[in-house]
Length: 29
Image 1: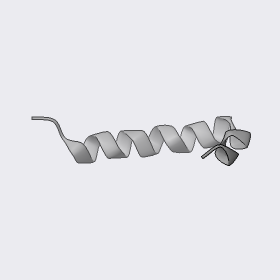
Image 2 (image 1 turned 135 degrees about the horizontal axis):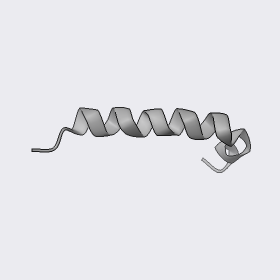
Image 3 (image 1 turned 30 degrees about the vertical axis):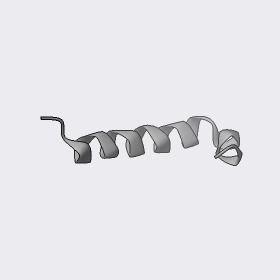
């Protein structure tokens, strides 16, 4: 089956990278 923890960690990783790449976008969140 799918691994929720892996998905969550992947999302968090992408979120951190996205924040670093687009710090201005954090205001939208």
